[in-house]
Image (tube, rainbow, N blue to C red; front, side, top):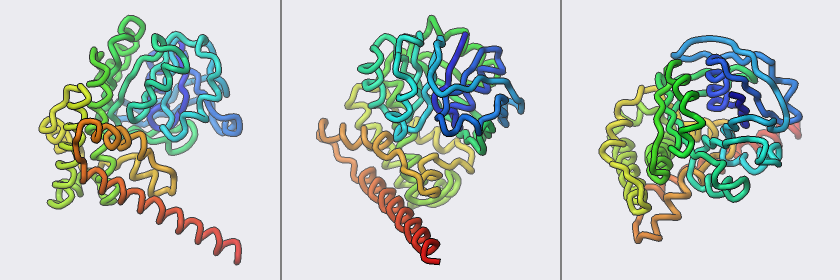
Length: 307
């Protein structure tokens, strides 16, 4: 099959390299101003192996069987400028954090074409065309509506080391990631600590567990099947060096995905007369850190200009 990757960063690059290694034809969709920075060989360092694969490069989405969308939620609107014609692809698989993007994509490209999916992984683009997959796992969950088209692709990814499954209930599919990712992203960013450092700090560990329970209460009210104790157990089993992408974004002065990751929890809670005070407090702390980074960056720029 032919695949295109819109957003060849850490996650998109991992998917692209893995698909190409499995024998698929893969095109990276990149911005006009960045295309010359990307080599035609994509290199991956992963617990699944180290290899380089040939890929195509393009600035617009070509005619393909599957388009994987792996941009940051904050970049989605601008990224879709390279995808004006949904009829050029058979299926769209968004791997974005959050929930709200699914409805937006279906409204724009047609409900039948969008196959929701989630991925649990820590992967980073260290340079254009160079991907480092840091976590010992890569768990890809795909809505069952994509089973006919995607069965063989998921089997190929599993042969490389991915854990893949089809999920019948889309609410459960999407919220299952959010109740894990939201608390982890908020706490690691607010505390500026790794997963291991959070586990070793009683105060932050408690904040994390309460945040998980708040998120799960909202998810259950929204109709998803989630279990807070299971989520907490999974978090406890993580390697100690995990750092969230939100944490890295704030450190680098980038806009974090606060609305995509925490927004669904904050917006849904009042609909069900639920209170999420720890979640709200953590969001406020992440916003404070983000604004502080912006002020520091602006101060440095002003200082450099005056010099």
